[in-house]
Length: 384
Ligand code: GLY
Image (cartoon, rainbow, N blue to C red; front, side, top):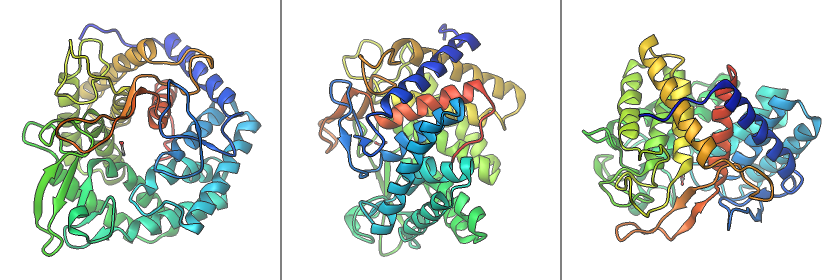
């Protein structure tokens, strides 16, 4: 790959720009949240619903860490109140995405400020997630009615929900959260990774026996393709799993998943939404997949042997420069997000998704882009 690594100076400028944009956008989004994805590059306001609101609070915490601006802290604390209220009232928490929601908002609040409200909300969210563990099959059921045959599946994205459970074991002294997280990770790794190291988005099990049934896509182009964001969830998920469990198998899995991702990038290094598409395609990109993968590479570089650490850090810095040059929002007039050219969901003849947030900002793309810049700037203590 000929794309150069991002320099310290370029990183510093992009990091500063991201914080300025968050400081601007917090005026619009404190009592309300940005919707999951933008429309014509601008987010509409949303209540604290969906799986995506924690990313915005996470951005505020990242900007607070960087600037120590007390207005940011106050805004994030208002949102932590909203997350506590949400879990107490069980508003739209009937799914597995408690980690995305509560790690970046409430665990972050606890880690950065010692917030007891944050701790309480995050432990309640972990308890809520624990209810979704299926003994038959040993996994957390992603969506839908618990035990229902047509929803008896895990999805690769859930690897990012597991850090909440590792944290909950630490915070409460109860090892059961960690035990279930480890069981889920083992199951997911065993079934979602194909022999060529691409990944299934979702994997079904038999609710009667727990036996594996089949891998299918939800948001990818087709069942057998590699959905770019799913592959990225696998990359960062394996890095975060290694961080907690130190199982050498996850180092190996990380390298295989990341190599597949890197080998299937187009020449400008911003992935298409599915790796069925390559240079010359008119399909949209998913910049968020790249931002997630960069975070995974920078996390895993802490643990890999020197030569491999150097390789994946270098690749992460190339991908990050491509994001900064091709996708970064430059001014509040352009967008109220941080990262352009994401794709939430794209319909295909082989999936059941409607088009949603196609070639738009999405809140996780913004968050992981900012986290990637933070990681590239300093030795960062993850909220995960
Ligand atoms: N976790 C859902 C998604 O990546 O769209």
